[in-house]
Length: 126
Image (cartoon, rainbow, N blue to C red):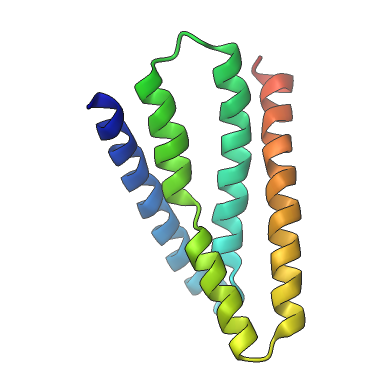
């Protein structure tokens, strides 16, 4: 039950962080571009890559903390459903090139961010 509660807390914090980033981007950029979703997904991938390597090396960390940070926080921070909805809206508005660029950039940079997070952990922490 502690694991479930840990995921619940981490997920709540991640979801609130995503919401606040969305508000911040809306006030700063004042644009229709899905920059907030792109940002939280990139940061979430970077964080997850970092934590993955960190937790492999530091096995004494409690399972509930690992779950709170990975499944909870990173899961709550990132959002595939919003990403998908934004692409749907772009296609509905005939912004096909923008949709394709967004899809490609999100996938390539998301995977690169996981690798970068792992690299940063190995280089500076482990």
